[in-house]
Image (tube, rainbow, N blue to C red; front, side, top):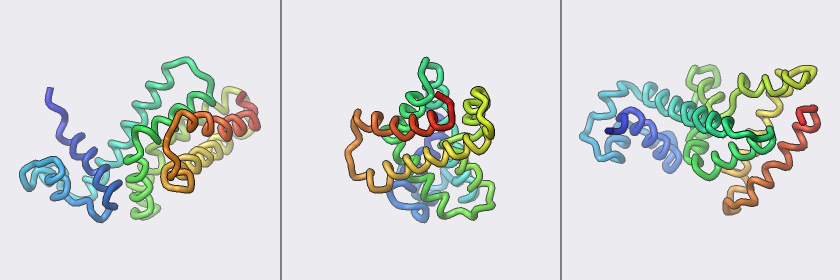
Length: 188
């Protein structure tokens, strides 16, 4: 079965943005990276905005798929979250870098920015974890938890810890602040 061209183009766009920055993303750059005839990407995505939206949706779909796959395994919330972050850092680093680059480049009130905000972590998926245990304000607790996760991912992906090679020790290190937060609000 032939891979979906749109998905290949979106994945290529992620790589281009992660390696060369958002301004390097053009229809021609995607065509060249995939060795497609000139104009192929323009045929599927008429505008740069459409290509950027496809890129963001690619990140969203990959995140949901990964999270759902991990969620099927029995695991405590700390382990599940640490494994998800580990997967992001070890297998999807380009997506994280592209996401951060696009968040900086897009206007805050744009639909694309909002799509990117929720592309890796979901308030809707986090809220029930805090509602189930009867946390006083599950919306605030879930939002704070996502802020913690965003900070961890940024630090390990682009911040001071990004220079450290990824290892099995990373999961243990990620578990510590996650566990502290979840215990602090009474989830575990």
